[in-house]
Image (tube, rainbow, N blue to C red; front, side):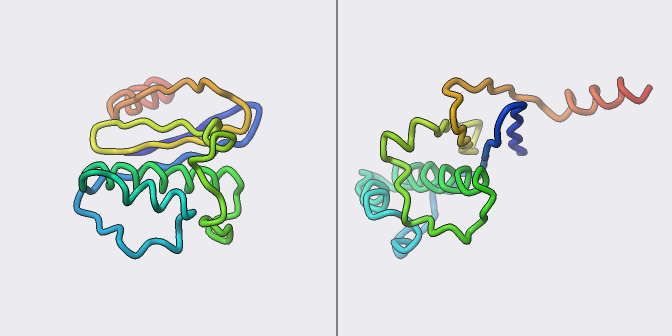
Length: 128
C-alpha cells in the first residue's frame, strides 16, 4: 500500500501502517503522551489496543511529516487526542491498513483509492 498526500495550497502529512494485532505495546510509554498511553492500554481487548496504538502512531507520524522535522520532535510532548489537535487529523482503515492525515486548515479532505492497474493504465495512456 502507498499513501500519498497532495495539496496545492499547504503542506500535509500522511502515514500508513499495516495493523498487526499481535503487537506488544507494553513498554512504549516514552513515545506517547501520558493520556495517549492510558487510552491505548485501557482498551478492553488486544485488537482494540492494537487499533488504538496504530491510530495514535500514524497520527503522530503524519504530524511530524507535516512539520518536516522527523523524529527530532519529542513525540511524547504532544497529545493527538486533544480536541484542538485532533481536529486536523483524519484517520481511516483500508483493508488491514490504518491511514492518517494531518491537514493544518482543511477539514474535509478528498480521499481517493487507486489500485495498481489504474496507475499502470494512467501512465501507459500518457506515454502512448
